[in-house]
Amino acid sequence: MLDEAALGRNLALIDRVRRESGAEIIVALKACAMWSIFPELAGHSDGATASSLSEARLVFEEYGAPAHTYAPAYSDSEFEGIVGYSSHITFNSVGQFDRFGARALLRGISCGLRINPGYSPVETDLYNPALPGSRLGVPELAALPAGVEGLHFHVLCESGAEHLARALEAVEKRFSHLLSRESGLKWLNCGGGHLMTREGYDVELLIETIKNFRSRYPHLRVILEPGSAFTWRTGYLVSRVEDVVESDGIRTAMLDVSFACHMPDCLEMPYKPAIVGAHDTQPGEKGYRMGGSSCLAGDWMGGRNADGDFGYTKDDGSDWGVGDRVVFEDMIHYTMVKTTMFNGVKHPSIAIWSADETANPRLRIVREFGYEDYKNRMS
Ligand SMILES: Cc1ncc(COP(=O)(O)O)c(C=O)c1O
Image 1 (cartoon, rainbow, N blue to C red):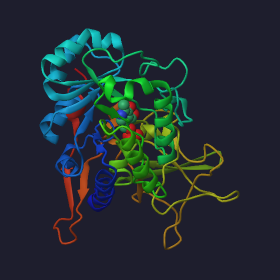
Image 2: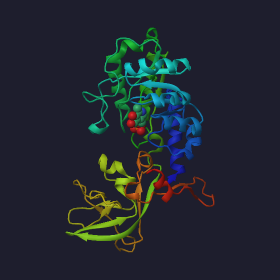
Image 3: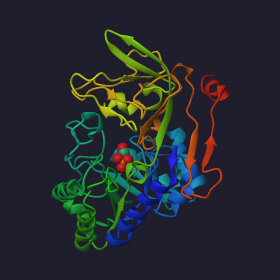
Image 4: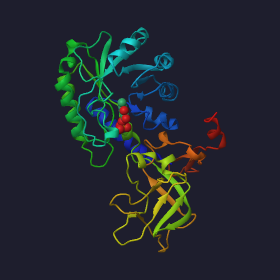
């Protein structure tokens, strides 16, 4: 369930950064492709970025503008389509530009190359594109190949403004010869991972960092393509307790949603999601694990680390039981886009909680899923 008012607050902040920094901020579809909100996103961004043919087409059809597209490797079968839906295409290697660049240039598309500055503040290897041997971006480049007028780097993930400052320093250290007006460069895309809507993010430093960089390279368009920042903390996954089981003294509330199918980042990252009204149990306090509805043995969340299970009591002092609601926080970005129908489990409906307090009904169901959606993916 997307909370429209929370989205509005994020968009207002993003607008301010666009206005005050002079950067173009485009929305990364990979984080949230809920296209019923694209009209709203389009009103508060400078475009959208796609990482595949399908995303580029969705940008073109529903966002209403051609996409900035980047994918680690384009294929013959998809490239023609991508050209039709894109205004900017970034290539991951000189080899890919040599293979496909001419086709893009002939259609007037602005071409870029992804560079790897060899710096990233990201501590989880799974999300770090700058590790030694990384396949993402060229680690060195003597000169821009003829036809390339943009550079792109992506090294941040839920990062702060100070990390963008360091990333830009690393880019200048390795690639300064490509940034000058004489090099022919027209734009620098600083990727995603700028979590400017997170509480405590230093928005002033972000604005100053970009303004400072732009003052040194006034001929460059500076582009940021965050995904998470747009839909950070804008919605919930609402589930229900279907059973409570106990084994070896551990109590598990069995839910009608699954971590493996509906919140895969919780297991992948891993991180323990926040539940409205629940707290981390203290030593000696008996809480609950939350059990997912798939058959995967590890499809549960709770005190995997030192942080305890979910502690909870209702206002009347009673325990969690069948029929009670369990509401997971911050389940829009990188959650909806990653869901699967593993085990054929029921897919959650998509809904919007209107910002208009007088709306009737306030909750609008955008989409419900059924057997046909599952069946159509399988044969
Ligand atoms: C190339 C690229 N651009 C943009 C993004 C969006 O990043 P975020 O959602 O963390 O802002 C990603 C995320 O993986 C990415 O790989």
